[in-house]
Image (cartoon, rainbow, N blue to C red):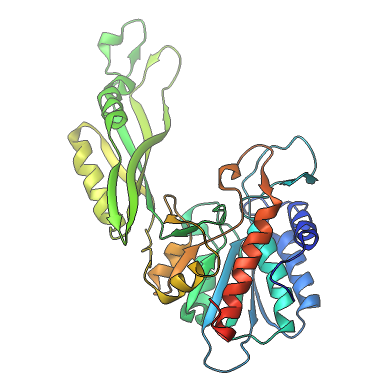
Length: 365
């Protein structure tokens, strides 16, 4: 087998995947499809099906070899498309084409070719549900709790869309409800009430003036930011509102705990409003100096940068498994109308990961 995978096989696999709807919470049909295919093409592999998630293990050729996880979520966000899944030139269109069925296609095609050569490492394929929903409903958490071998992986690669850049670590994320209270009145006599929306104006203005806070770690710059993202309030068009709530999203750098960040947010807001923690996802360390990270870089990575968003590398980092983000999906197309990804990027990602896997047998990287 050569390092270059024909585009046709990757394109066919990705078209199959994007043609099966799998919005968050509705992943079963896609999981069934992937399971049926890998049962047929990898009959000797071990498989675990847990709910709408699937784990497949390809053993190494010798005992004691490192265990490498290739990880991807089956679900996509609901997006609008002006046509069916299709290939137009070098762009493949379809729901989840970028985020992250392109990564799933690479995982599947790579695994199906590995049985034809000796393997110097175990390969664990992890296909899981509900990544795009709340942190607490993400199905990767139960997988890691249920399957002990996953907690003992030597290294994990999350094939999130990254334009084939190696993105290290990830930002933590928390959501808080900031609640302003007032007193109702008729809108014709607003002086008889206390307008909760108006009370929020000074804080919203202060949020707009906040500059990112740069945190440097392992030679990388993570940018801590705060943004109001949702607002709700009011009882009617002619009523001065007595309640106004804002969802505030804070992204924080590796090395900080969500509890610490929330306490900081609450102190900054002070007595002008109530502040309630709604949801929190931990940050992940970059592991820039880990030998497997350096090995992966040597297998054809052109760009290394911090991951400014949150990904499930944080779940692996929390249990002591170093993990990175590397995937072929066109990052700017994630969650977009008429989502697409570049076909050539599929081939590049496949080649890099194939060289990485082979390096454990040949030490070629």
